[in-house]
Image 1 (tube, rainbow, N blue to C red):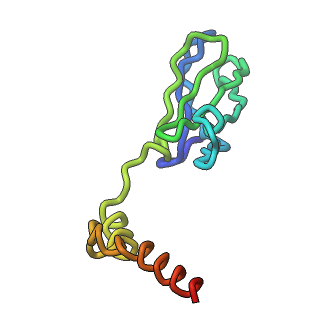
Image 2 (image 1 turned 180 degrees about the vertical axis):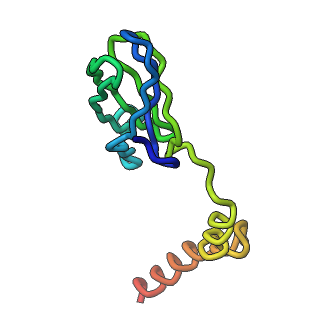
Amino acid sequence: MVESGQPSLEFVCPRCGVSITETIEEVPSYDVLADRESGAQGYAEQSVTCPGCDQKFAVDITNTGACLLADLGNENIHVSVIDDPINAPEDSWEVEAYQRENLPTDPWGNPYQYRDEPAGECARLDAQHAQ
């Protein structure tokens, strides 16, 4: 049984035509520190059994970083991901609270604020070294 709000898979059994809905057991992670996009994507495989004919399916689940994708490998059957936690819209109140706590009050600041600091530091070190 699938709980409401839980990420789940949904597809029609190609053998008997029964609609299959199964909770995703493991949401694959996405590696934001990977060097390439292909290395960042997370993969998982889940076994799903049709309640109508007991046919077993291996569903491949991919986390692209933007959403979850699922397919039945060799089968040409559309698999939907319901309540995708990756593609869920962010809570606007949470985003605003995060921004208030973590973003600078003046994000643009003064771009010339530290313009002379490295040159001044070099001149100071040169003067010390000359002594």
